[in-house]
Image (tube, rainbow, N blue to C red; front, side, top):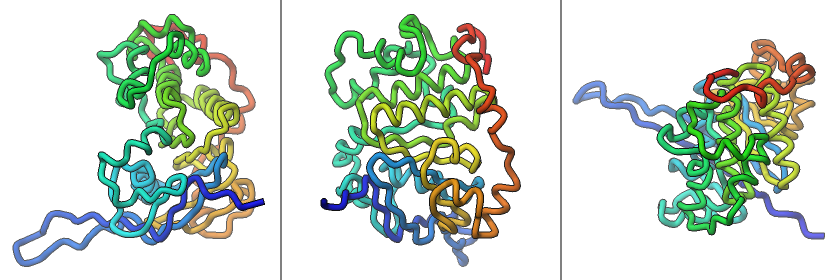
Length: 282
């Protein structure tokens, strides 16, 4: 049986940013956001990227998602090189890969009703919008069909993130990229949204790339993790192995510095789903 090709293949990826000149005679040194990053993500795998703010993980996510250009290196999505493609030629990537952002309030247009927010990617990619598709997506993320006629400000933070997830799933992508999707949420609601993402990834057979600063969060949803520090991957492996037996000093510091979700994951209830609309509850 032939070996399956990676859903995502990254090789020797670098990204440099140039600061404004300090003076006419002296240029500022470049910022090396990524320094030779390489990894594969298998189809159907849940791959975590973890590290503190400024480590390069969000830069890496933007490159993989086609939102920024690498300085050097290679990115292949389902066997297609995207590193030097123009925006016009990245249409296939919008079909195959969708994002969930950190702050649902800023990523959802406050002037649009939920039905239009969820349908927006389908409209942009000229997908037919069948009757009942928005209702189906709302139910998939645990919201009632009545939510379709309301506006983002009428929902709690956790509910807004559920709307963001429904929007990302609307075009039936194969790869889901989540950028700190629960860091802005209350701890108890965080557990529920993590469980929802994990369940949907399994149900829809998606490939997941999950970015977080918290290794305990990544441990809950991912199979494998890459630990980033100063633009490099310093450790990579099965998430339980890395969490329980970290090899790199930075990984050990990262684990010691963050609280765990164990209590919240064990005791999470239905508070988010029961939160009334019109109040910005957790």
